[in-house]
Image 1: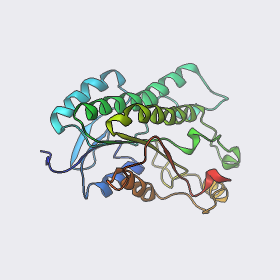
Image 2: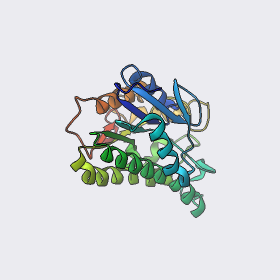
Image 3: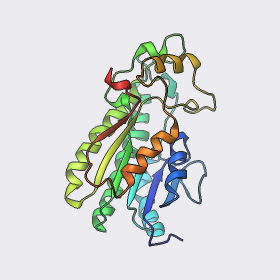
Image 4: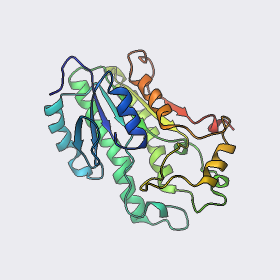
Length: 251
């Protein structure tokens, strides 16, 4: 059972590379429910973001079971089909549509569902949605030189859409004192999406060379930013895109 005296976080994607670091850090002071397809943490709910038709029904049940959240963090990274082939050379309409629905639409519906519940319960809540530097930057092909990695068009469309969603929601829900922000990391050290393999060493070298701090981010560094945005000390920031990229986007 959830202790009613503790603030409740709904964490979407808390079993992933960054999500697990958020889960570990914030569980020290909040009651966190991890919604993911892979079990991690004490309070876990199996949740598949891709099943967008059932989001409202499922969250109605979650609200009854756990109560309305004070904080929503969505760092999920759902992909559909041959995700790696979303480059300009292999772009197909069905592949675009499937991934937009799985990722961008799920982010939109979950955030909308939770924001409405916060407003209904008069909760001065916080919503933190994960975007990326590629939501506002073009992908530098030089980072992929000497590797098999290519640009991902669909990813940029999704992450740019999330940034627009944050601004629109923050404008609308400001009257309810609900703060809505985006976090946009640069490249993060870890495994390749959908694989246990580590990142290509050449890619890491190329990207680091183009980053003022000279390295990729550690997953725990992203979690510390989320910790601040979740805190009571962060009470007058809304509608913003907080970039954490070691200075990559300034050059």
